[in-house]
Length: 161
Image (cartoon, rainbow, N blue to C red; front, side, top):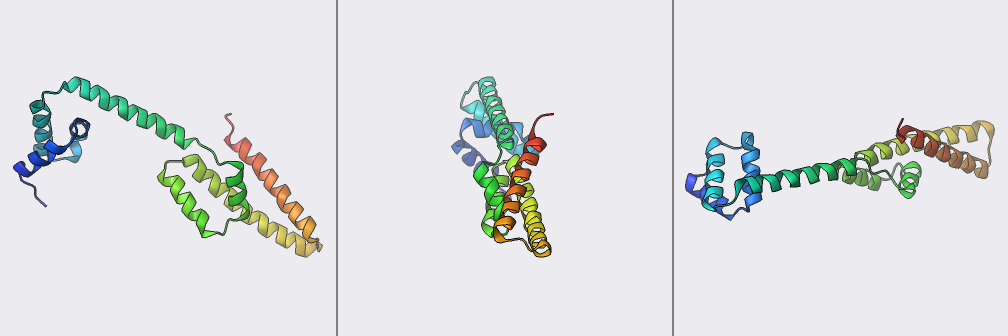
């Protein structure tokens, strides 16, 4: 869809300064005429372009720092329990998708880890219970032991070397 220069000028006149500065910085994603109109709009507003650019870069840096911090957030003990024991529930797939969309990379990684180990532990406990004819108490105790072992492995896996 082609937008005329007048329509684009009218649209850009409604944009805040930071959005226009963003167009200047992301110029490879825009047609040269659109970048030029953004530059003209900022000039027409008589804004201090260097000040606007500095604010834009500061804002981008804060966003980057926030994203890096988010990427390192770990699962709480309750979330670890849920992913380990309720690995089959579709609700937790949706929760994992939310983590991913929010940039919580560590939580996504840990949720996969606890779900997979939880599934394997469930199978192992079931097979062990059948072969050794374990009581329900002993089978659940084994499952809890495997969860605690998984917590330890996760701690070792995520600790700085």
